[in-house]
Every structure is written in structure tokens, then in C-alpha cells.
Length: 247
Image (cartoon, rainbow, N blue to C red; front, side):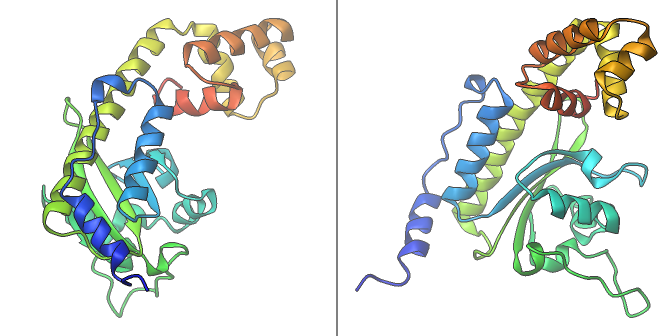
């Protein structure tokens, strides 16, 4: 019979090995997502996410989310509850540069007391622990990176390895932001207009009427914008443009 502690022992051994990342070799969001999935798989987490640190209440959680494998319904629930920006996790990250760890309570509103309404823990995070770090871009914009799962809290060498891995992955992500700056310069005003009207829910025919051009021309603008944004279809182009703050 195999030792029941084998998975934990293997994870402990891997914690002493570096998670190999070459930031210069990561050029696309797909490659970055692949690395993030490798990271959580290797260290026994289930979910990851990187989001802009909430600075005010003017944006929904989904609008601050940059990269994640969170289920869409979970993101929608956090949007509806408006709890992330007031969470214990965000409050603690604002006060330290060290990793923040804890259980499901980290996603509850900070300072929750008897006088506040009961907080319903959202599945699948109800039984999960979290490992989170505060990261900054070269220009000082704050981001939060979170790994979530049912495994034990990282400690020692594993904790340091995860911090370094997230720092390297964030540098890769910032490179895609720089690529977005290039895309902003390359997108024409008409391409940006088409993307904006598409976000507003307009069809190609409706956009054609609004802009006074043919539907064929609108389709051409979408195709060229999709190519410039390194996307595979219109919906992905819109999503990437929104994350890059192009529209």
C-alpha cells in the first residue's frame, strides 16, 4: 500500500525546485494562461486570478479582472454582491507587501460584525483557502494575484517559490499590457468605433447604419481589429480591447 502522505510529500519536494519561467519567451496571453494552469496544477490549487486592486467603488469586480480561470457564474456573483472591493483580502493586501493567506473568511467584508448582514460564502470558494500577493506594474499600478484551493496553507520554501513565480508571471502579463499600447496606436478610429458599438450590443447592420457605412465595411473593420489584437474572433477581440482599455 502506498503512503497516504505521498501527494503532500511530492508537493513538498517540488517546493524546493524552482518553477521555471522565462519571461522573455512568453509573448501571448495564451502562453501565460498555460503557465498559470501549470502553476496551480503543480502546487495543488484549483483557481487563480489577477485583478487590478480596487481603489474605489466605481468599477465592478469583472471590470477589474484581468486574468483568471474562475467560473463565469462566480464572477457574476461577486459582481452582484459587490463584496470584493470591501473584502478582508483586499484590506489586508493594502497593509502589507508580504503574501496574505487564509481561508474563506478572506473573501468576506472586512470588519464584518454582528451589526452587519450575514455574508453567504459563494461556491466553489466556500471551503477554499487563498494565497494572495500584491504586485505593481513598472508605473506603480497595484494588482492582486490570488491562488485558491483546498490544499494546506503554503509555508517555507514553497511560499517563497509561489511568490517568485507570481512575480515572474506578472512581468509576463505586463508585457502584454505593453503590446496593448502598441495595439492602441495601430487601431484606427473606425475600428475602435466598431468595437465600442459592439460592446453596446449593436449588430454589424446596426453599426453600419450608425456610422453611415456598409455592413461589409463594418465586417472588414472587425477583421482587421481582430488581427491587430491577436484574437481569434470578434468576441475575443472585444474582450481583449476592454482589458487593454482600448475601448
